[in-house]
Image (spheres, rainbow, N blue to C red):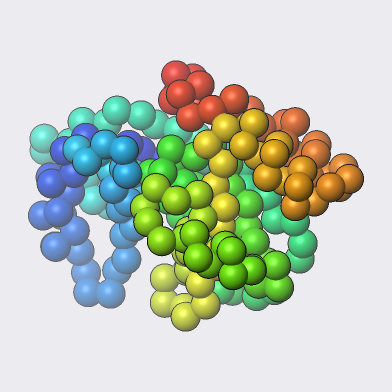
Length: 177
């Protein structure tokens, strides 16, 4: 697990991105609450930052501080996005943790609500694959406790995961970084 960077003035990254070798993928996610910022995982940051005059970094968050819950066995691990990609995407939406929703648990109420960048549900797939995975982000421990308590009542593993969330909300996560 690497670091995840919130960069201010991402326009300086564009020129580097355009010079990248053909077929090389770098995920850069705009911050949905701050149009002047974006988020990228450490590998993308190291590859895209210009050697001279790099864009300013507002936050650096260690990946392990952003937990991801897998409530059941992963159906096809080869199609699962990298964990840092999931973490980068949820930090761009100011989440503190995420839940992978297994394909058999996806209902129409979820699909009807995953429509905008500030939504709590989002799809993400590994670059080069066709299978998109559904994720539910949590912006607070309170949100995680309520949603997961209804979805997995009595599941001690899930309850322990929620209790172990390192931060109460995004502001606390950002302040600790």
